Image 1 (cartoon, rainbow, N blue to C red):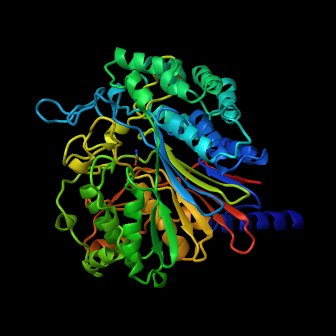
Image 2: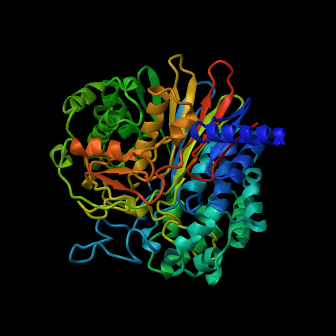
Image 3: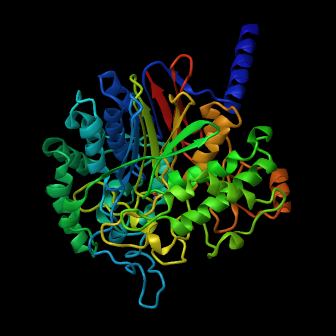
Length: 567
Ligand code: GLY
């Protein structure tokens, strides 16, 4: 009896401590952190077979396309940031492109109003950009894979999962239920994900034979099959039948781009992040530069004084995002100016420590509403020290809702990340400029922020990234400040409450239980306004390298079902 009581006490104590300060997962060799345990495990198996972090990332990306169909994808795009064990870095941009037939005003009615429903920038065939994921993964593998595992071997776990099925989680059951109206107008989406109305329940097997067949063709014929073979034919034919714009020519012409990562610093730590067409790196570095001038260590990470400074930095950097950012292959973006320390000093000097600035005085724009947080991030560090931070997406959950007939995979609605109407908000309520207007082959502006932080000696400190549309960059910012300024371990830094401000609408978004009434009232007294979101703000994934031992410390956001798995 006494022993039982003691054990119960022990469990409660450990449980309570764990809830407040969960430690990262530790492993000596390699680590994968993703939003899905099956996918993380697949990445680890690849590394155990001699694969490197890039090989593992390819396998994880294809596995998530099966087990996490809301954001994992073949029909979307993203960004892969790589730091090799020799310290060299590169950024692979496999963002979707606008089809050749896309036009600046394609989502507007003749009277200038935005089109609603199918045919708009968010739903249906016309919402999809030319998918980049297959080409991006193939490029990464060819250039930076270990050569020990073939393309076909790395796709096999995903093909098997699609063919044999996987167990539907409570989360997936809910996501499918919540997105019935998006998916049901499209015959293949309805059949695959909604079982023609007999909705999947937690614990049932979800099989995706069409997706397994597509993956099988990619295994046999290689990645170009997606862009030039049967898959391309199926996709383009279905597009044509339904008024979509993606043609076989668009698919044939799609190429990923290798870009120079953006570099900044924060209190002596080097920050390496994503350049345009993502706004993530530039906005992150600008915010860190502004905050560097304040002694944040002195401030409690849940205090109104700290939040005030975060909000004012966010407001200024997101105003710049709205005004200046777009695809640098098409428009000029003053990146070096935006991430310049002297510029940040000027931005900082306009912050009043007692009062909120009004966004209307920082720059002009129109207020708008917020929507949910999509996309997915994973990260891998292998035994040699190669590190990958990869964020990819369909944009909204389940993208455009469309599975082109016979292909088995969902298409993105990334066209909504363009400025579909100047001054009007997109899916994330963000207002953007003419620089991000739709044009053929152009990439829409992103917020994805896969990031590495290096120690003063140049060694990898940690990797981090998150989904969440425009909230992504602010999540990454707060994780970095939590580690560097507030001495949190990476798991704590990710799990801690986050806030979000994006200049317009001029309001602070907070997680339902993430801000005390007292703190909110103190900030309201300074002139800040607030709104809460019905759901969590992030699903961040990160890996830290323990300084003395080199142990990999994996951290997956406590908000969702993800898992860090190591070996
Ligand atoms: N589709 C969300 C982003 O790229 O930021």
